Length: 238
Image 1 (cartoon, helix red, strand yellow):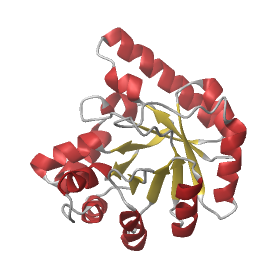
Image 2 (cartoon, helix red, strand yellow):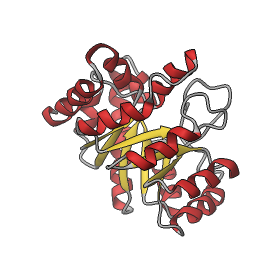
Image 3 (tube, helix red, strand yellow):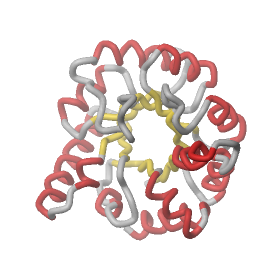
Image 4 (spheres, helix red, strand yellow):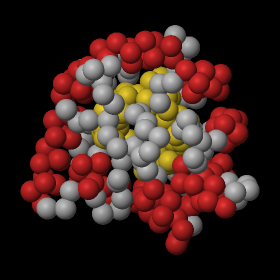
């Protein structure tokens, strides 16, 4: 399993004070040097953390993979088509939310996302859809023409009772198997940390996890490169 590092919350710290420090691009380079398979950032409409300059700089300096998370709006799609990341991940976005609260409404908006996916695949840019771990959502995602689905692990990460944790793991395993059967690459993310990651690592269809907030929090104490190494060591041990 690969580890993609989301550097949004390095930018969050920068924006809390203003100015240029800490630089999320610097954090991304350190994550790559420590073994991350790619860098994830979310260019939100309100630019609350990552900004346009960050994304352009990341495109210039990264040597692994740039995964640009985004809402399927005309403005952000135009920027993404100009920058040409290696992968775009469509996610839902609400102005008032603190972080992404769930998967895409893919069942209602399947045709809308099919058109959005086509815009990028025509340019040779791979597309991932951030979806709930439900077989009906996976099937709808496959029909849009995307090649990757990222399973929303938020309900699993937020579960506290063992019965609830086990129930969410069953959902994630079933969704992963369904996605693999449809020829989709399976990734996962949201709320994952050093405590709850091992069970996700043991789902064989999941090829990559995307981790941001918890890893950046860990990096405050041990440094960015050591934080990435700690997560990679856990993945390999699991």
